[in-house]
Length: 187
Image 1 (cartoon, rainbow, N blue to C red):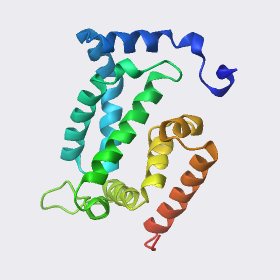
Image 2 (image 1 turned 90 degrees about the horizontal axis):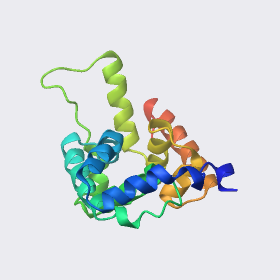
Image 3 (image 1 turned 45 degrees about the horizontal axis):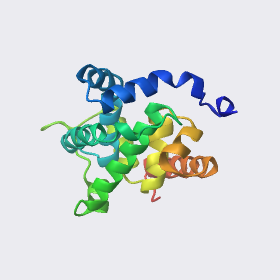
């Protein structure tokens, strides 16, 4: 029955084995895990906080945090889904504790070019990044996980502990807000 919903416990063996090796502190297992997940976790951190340097720090802290949590993985979902859930909770928790949380997310985006005005595709990308940072946290999380990371609504629902319907609604809300922001309107 679980296979119908995208997770088949009979194929979870590699995830359980990797999680077990990680929980045991096997260095080669961490290297495997790092190769599989570090870039996506960093990308998620960048989009959550809007600052590459801070995202590097958060990603490193998350990886250390995960080292103490792999023993909690039970194999009832994919390891990647479980990792994303831990990561989202970790990033949200850290961002909420940051001074000026809302101001940092909206005003914290900077142009990564010294002395030059961006043009063309770079300008469009920077506009999109700034627009994403203006989304409410729930909508931003769902948008990033679905449209940027490519996860399905059922995976997002599991990661964020929401219903699939809420995930779909938040995604629709995020897209409508982004359209408005990018056209120069107020969300």
